[in-house]
Every structure is written in structure tokens, then in C-alpha cells.
Length: 199
Image 1: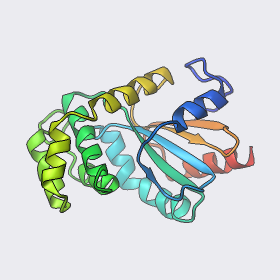
Image 2 (image 1 turned 90 degrees about the vertical axis):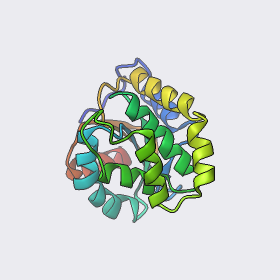
Image 3 (image 1 turned 30 degrees about the horizontal axis):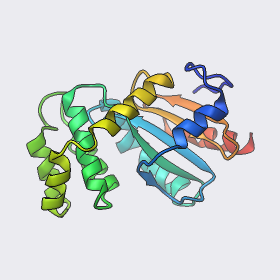
Image 4 (image 1 turned 90 degrees about the horizontal axis):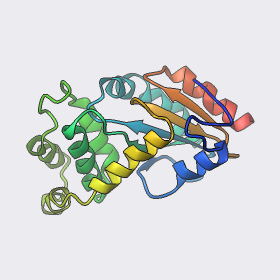
């Protein structure tokens, strides 16, 4: 866990917060929550999958549900082509307000990196399992309409010094940021949220 006034990108803390919070992205939790936790993740990343299974449930229960923090998603699809198409599929599900359900299904069915578990055929099957309107999903997914968003999120991560997934930016109400790198335990997030609120 690290916190500094200058990120490795050279942006000031306040500028980094503004860049991270700009635009449109999936968010879980109350829009009025004072803290935003931005996750840069890759659906093929085994550390991301581990964090999802072991730490995220406690974070959602103790921080997101009570309205202390909200969880935002940014892609850092760096492990191969299947990472990119998995993100595109998740955004196609987002159009039907099912991003987080699809996110959870991907991590729950995660296989070996680049083994083909996240190929287009299986990604479409996951959407069907969620009961999505498949005509709408397929039209969106097959159009590659979210390829630019996935690419720009990855570039944003690189610009901000992200080198691996998961990487989290915990942003307080006054723009204070604490960066958390890797599959860290829930207690690290609890301390970070307390710190950016009090700071």
C-alpha cells in the first residue's frame, strides 16, 4: 500500500483523482458514498480472481452495502486477446444492467490464462446463463463497440503507473488517494478507506 502526493505518472493527487473519476464506468454501491475504490482488473488474472473470491465479499458487506465506499471497474486487459474480449462481453452485459453479475460469473468460471475458457463462444454462453436478451447482447458484443473503451482504460492504467492487476486506487472525498497493488486482504482496504476519509 502506498500513498503519495505525486503518482508515478507525474500527475498530482488531485489530478489523478479527477482522471480516475471522469467518464462512464460500472459502479457498485451508492453514488453518494464518500470513497470510491477503482479497481483495474483483468478477467483472466488469477490474482484478481482470488481477490474476488476471498476479499471482495467482505469489502462489499462492510464498506459498499453500508454506503461507506463504492467499487468502480476499469479494465486492465493485459494478459492476452481473451482478456480483451471478456471485457467487451462484460460491457455488452452492462447495457442490460448486468455488468456485475457477468463480472461475477466470469471470475467464478475462471480458467487457465489463455486456455480458451474466455473465447467468444463461451462468453456468449455466460450471457445466456444470466438470461440476457441474446439478440441485443450478440449485436453489441459482435460489433466490437467497446474495444476502444477497453483500450483507453488500459492506457489510463499505464499512464497512472499500473503494471499489474489487480491494482486499486482508493479515492477519498477530498481527492486523497491510496494505491493498493495486488491481491491484498480486506483489512488493507479498511485501513485505506479510514485513512482517506480522515485525511
